Length: 133
Figure (spheres, rainbow, N blue to C red):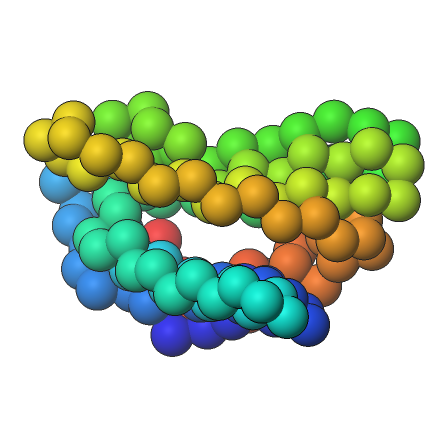
């Protein structure tokens, strides 16, 4: 398990739970903790399957986004549902965590605003993931 994001308000952890070589992909549990003075959300999205090449492209896109004045990147699961998005506008960074249940009954979205300088830290943390692909 590793921390993708960890700041005063938001913590996002990814825990590798499974992998397959048939379509090179990896499953993560995405664990979110958002703490504000009068609000607290703890959420876990289980077995979010991501194609390994999509993970790599998302990682590369974060590096490119760091160098741009504005833009966005999104990590999608195997069903093309968005899981994690970063939207940069100047020094502001909006992080959006989304989850949609497989039955189509419900969904969860959390948006949190921070500073775009965090993209560098996120990129470095993703680079530390012990990838086998």
